[in-house]
Image (cartoon, rainbow, N blue to C red; front, side, top):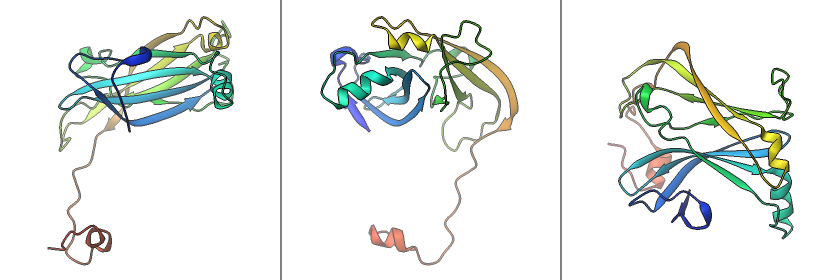
Length: 183
């Protein structure tokens, strides 16, 4: 988890000193892609997606930040027409940046996200999934990255979160080590 106040080009949402949890990483030949869920003190602000030039990150590790470019996408509102804020956009890990089906050969990074919206206990089921594509990832190797982010909602098998499991009576060594009782 990290916190930020919108300085240095990072997201700054009204009334929110953001906490970002559950960072997810993916990569291709050109970049590293991070997706996060952003929370305020009492709000959920949705998913943010970042693209970082791979070589720029390596150079930054050696003290040279002159080629470290971060491209940010606020994906939070994209799925609102389908029922809620975008959350947990999972990037892919691929061996190369060029997808054979991408005729422009300028690189593409894929992501997936669920469309099961609701509050605990998550008794909602869904049968849709969002497939995201970040195009032109090769442009991360230039001084002016020009990326695009698009998505398509597709049918899937029905899925959902299971109800919470009840703890059976008995010893709970981990809980006991944290001061919980086994009642």
